[in-house]
Structures are given as C-alpha cells and as structure tokens.
Image (tube, rainbow, N blue to C red; front, top):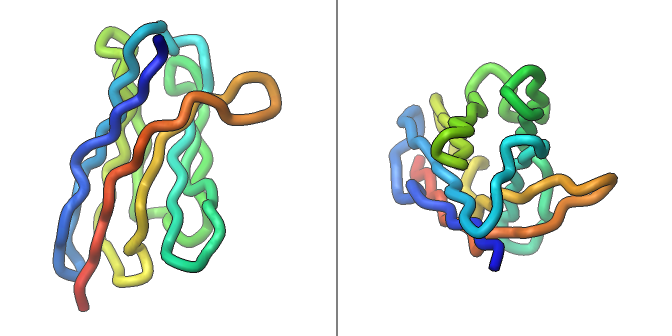
Length: 117
C-alpha cells in the first residue's frame, strides 16, 4: 500500500522558517517527479514546487521563488521543502504528491502551515 506522510508544519511568525518532509512508503519513488502543493481556505490547490528524479530539475511558483527550496533524499524515499522568509500569505495546508504520467497521484494527508503577522 502506497502512502505519503507529510510533517514539519506548524505555527511560525512572519520571516521565520519551516522545513517540511514527505516520506513515502510502500513503493520507491526515486524515479518519479515529486510535487509540493498548498491549499489555503477557500482557494484552489496550487503547485508550489516540483523536483525531478535525482533532483536534477526543480520548479517553483513565482510566489515562493527565492524563498522555498525543494530537495530529495532517494535513500530515505523522502522529499523536503525548506521554507524561508515565510509570509502570512504562505498559510495553507501543504501536500506532497507523486507525478505519474501527466497527473499527480498518491497524495499525502497534508501538514498545516500557519504564518502569523
């Protein structure tokens, strides 16, 4: 059974940092692109970062570029999202997912990030 488990969320003041982790179990995802999404209350879920196998290429949404860094440790089947200079508008539930073909499958349950002003 494939499972993704996010952790590392919490409450932080604006300007602070958090590092999210996404651990995959039940299958090895080292050969798949992994994505980090977020969804704020009343808003659509959006892709904020993406990392290809081996960490060769990364993508960041404009809203987080220069502040967030996505990395992965294939040996641990884990993907990370380092978030620096956090802003109140970064407040959301953050999810990781595996890209299979042209879509994302195998979603985690999410971890809440709250940034206070």
